[in-house]
Image (cartoon, rainbow, N blue to C red; front, side, top):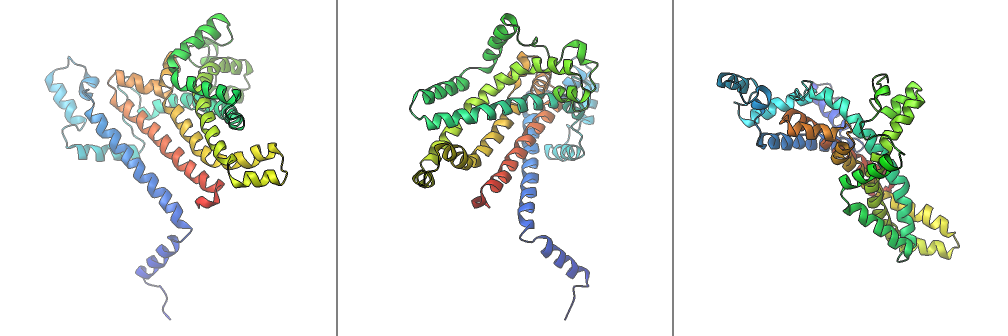
Length: 356
C-alpha cells in the first residue's frame, strides 16, 4: 500500500481534505467577497477617472506653471495606461493606502476613521428605532387589513417615502429646536464645552460619553443626535412597516395558521410567535439593506445638521475635486453594502433551514 509521502501526493491529500463538503460554503463566501470587492474597486476607479475634474489641478492649483503640471502629472502616474494605474491603486488599497486628501491634507484612511463613526452611530440609532417601531406597526397593519389602522399605516408610509428628507429636517429644526426647544442646536455632535474634553475611544460620542462616565456630556450628545436619527428612522419605519405588512399578510394565509386556529392556539401566539417568526426570515435581508441605505444615504441629513459624517465628507470632497476622498469614501460605502448583503445571506440560512 502506498502512502502520500511525496510532495505532490501530500498537496493532493491536503487540498482534497481542505476542499471538503464543509469547506465549500466558506470558500464560496470568501471568493464572492473578494470578487465583488475587486469589481467595486474597478468600477469606482474608472468612474473616478471619467469625472470631469483634473486631479493635478486639484493638487497644484490652476495657476501653477506648465512644468510643474507635467511633473505632478507623471508623479501621480497619470501618464501610464489606465490598467497600470488601476493595478497600482489596487495594490495601495490592499495595503490600506487610499491616498491623501487634497482638502484636509490627511491620509484618506485617517479621515474615514474620523468621519465614518459619526455616520455609523447615526444610522445605527435610526435603524434601531426603525425596527422597534416599524415591525410592530407592520404587524398591526396586516392584522387589521383594510381597516382604519391599516389605512393609517399605509398613509404614514407613503408620506415617509414621498417627503424630501431635507424638508423634514428643516421643519423638525423649526419645530423641535426653535419653538419647543426640545433638542440641541443643529451644530455637530456635541456642544463646544464637551467636544474637546471628551476622550475619543470609539469616535462614537454616545459610547465614549458612557465609557467616560460623563452623563452630562451623554445628555448633550443625545440631544444632538435624537432629531436627525428620528428623521432618518422615519424612512426606515415607513419602509419596514410596509414590508412587514406584506410578509405578514402572506404568512397569515398559510395552512399552518389555519391549522393552529383549528387547534385552539391563541391569536396572539399565532401572530407574534408563528407568523412573525416565519416573516423574520425575509425581514432580515430588508433590515440589512435598510441599514446599508442609511449608512450611505444620510448625506442631506448630515449637511442640514452639520453632522461630521462620511456622507458629508464625500460631498465636500466632490465639491473640492478631491477624488482620493471621494473614491475612498465610496469604497467604504460599497464594502458596507457587500458585507451586509453577505451577512444577511448567512443569517437567512441560519433562520431558514430550507435555504441550506
